[in-house]
Length: 164
Image 1 (spheres, rainbow, N blue to C red):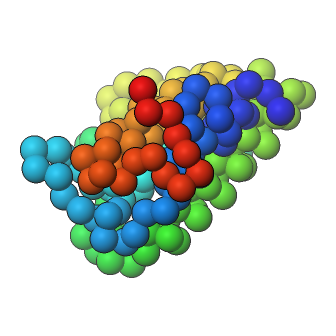
Image 2 (spheres, one colour; image 1 turned 90 degrees about the vertical axis):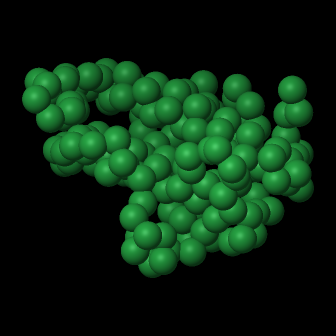
């Protein structure tokens, strides 16, 4: 497995995404922490949203960039329609698909069209660069999930995790 694939699904820079997300209840996923903008559920939904956009772009489906930052987070209706367990499965399935793309060395340097924010030109990136961007984005938001878990005294997860 390439390091890029490892960064997307395994224990590369920190605990594996599956470990970061394990052992959480529906209640913990939706718990609001004072003065913090998002719940664990909302952070994970955001990750799954951008992961789907990335996978679409790799598949040459020109999914538009959201017009506003809040468009990349779930609405109350979207939250009501998907349980945390279903969302976690959706994210981890997409992460596995992303890792498969990262391990496909014959296509990593292929160019793809990546729409930008409204009013900005479409970017042409390699699949590799887009997956690096996704891995970096995932690391940031998974780190936020770890902090939310720490506030809830729900860290480390059952499989263990880094405590530093």
